[in-house]
Image (tube, rainbow, N blue to C red; front, side, top):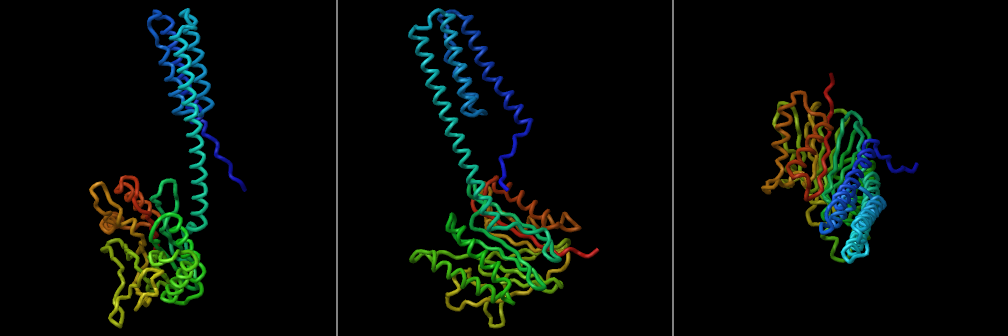
Length: 381
């Protein structure tokens, strides 16, 4: 089904027509005062205000109409003053025609730019729906919510990514951050998301899934990256598996910021990678760097009970700065929100609060893309 452009609200239509009275009033008042004034007083040049005002709310046709009325008014002023063909009135009329024409041309360029931005926004939204599919409110026994904030103007998608899928007896969640920006970052994000949605159903453990993602992304780089560029393209990734039976949550972290575990009445926990039996850290390098010496993928297990919320995020959240260059204090803010809500925060409510607070901290605009996913298992009542 083709979606048409939404109809303008009746209130906006009425306000637009009411605004037309302002330039018309300018034309009427200036003309009346000029005609009533002595011949040595010339207020006609002020008529250019009428099309200039119209351009602030109207399109090129309406602006051109008001400009034409202003020229007619200037002609009438010249006739009433008995000197239409004097050098002074001829100059004023020509100047008004030229300025009104320039204003109309400006309106046409502005409208063209507006249509282009609308098309860009439409394409961006379509790409976002295809790549970053909206997560459902429920996945098995879990409640889920997510948000994405793009740093680029007129864009809805960048290098941050998330996805979730159901596998046998569990839910698997991916969150990641592509190095770089622009179309290359979107291309890399699409490669990782596509691979996860397919490979998540073919690997019984998260370490095997992480290794398969790395191999798939490496093949993607072989096909798309220029010579020497592949080493600079990688993706920090965190894989999470939440069993339906309430067992320990598995996390395989590939260079990504560790998640937070929020629970009412308890301190906020940072679920960082641990140390394996071999004495090495269980964290792994980002996807795309798996060929480095000594790389191995492991899984950390964490107890996440009913009523506890797992908050996953990208570094665009924690590295957002305010006017004083201070980073966003995610852990402190999350602890404050949990303390204020004895019954706990649902994922959707938590992310709505995080999104608003993050934008306020950053002055309404982020310097880097940011994404977050919240997951919890509701308590049985």
